[in-house]
Image 1 (cartoon, rainbow, N blue to C red):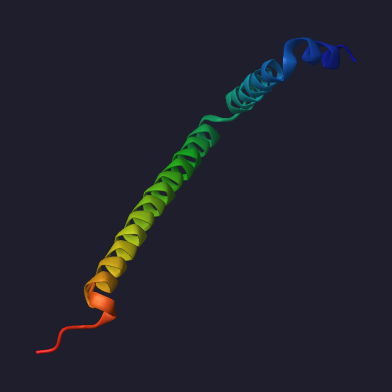
Image 2: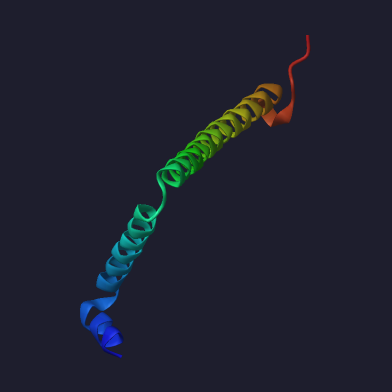
Amino acid sequence: MSGSTNEGAQGSAGSASSSAGSSADDVRHAFAGLSLEDKILTLIKVELDMLGDAVDTVVSAVSGAVDDIARACERSDQSAQSPPGAGGQTATN
């Protein structure tokens, strides 16, 4: 009961940062209890997860840029195919 009273006194922002700090401490404590081999394996897995996230971010950004370029090319092709004329008439040779 005193924990909820304390959270109310700190406000929601305080309890959120407190909770994040607590979970980080829990992770550090659990990591400290691992054997050296398990620590190394865990670090490798974390690094691979971070690398995967970075690759996903780059791929998403490049994909978005390619989509933007494709849309711009389509618009320029459409405007080149229908040049502005008087009353929508096209010139004939």
